[in-house]
Image (cartoon, rainbow over all chains, first blue to last red):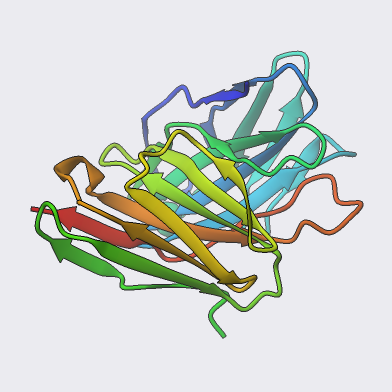
Length: 114
Length: 116
């Protein structure tokens, strides 16, 4: 079975500061990794994903995440955050051939202070 | 041009009642899901349907019954509602096209169910 651990439940940072949201997973088979973002009172939106190939993946709004197989991690980073990045961020994994079930971490609340 | 839509957005009801939540997707996907998000924001899959066939059923009480009349719809019916059913329910869809390594799931806006 797969599991995901997001090490920080809350991360407060100042605007324009860098941020890293940590995600570790466990799985006995090959995995596919996702970061979703949930803005207040909204549904989940896909931020970025790793399926195969380059271990560094990027989103259109400046976030990036790196798949590290040896450390079983998929940490999310942004070099300079904006107030509008305030949201809940969820790391998720699906595993195995034809994987369909997403297993989510507990979420990290990112709060940007001016 | 909403991709995955859910109705209603909010649902407040009494214990013991029966209620339904509807989900529709216009993405042409063949797989749909229901997830439950509890008060601590934890998300857990409940069901998944592929081409109207149930393929994932995660130890959910049988008071919950999903119904998929066609590939674009997946409704969730809940009998004898209990206080613990209060949560946000998310519908999602994906395309299980052959050759894909994994399917990106697209989520609806959620339905906040409050059982009094």
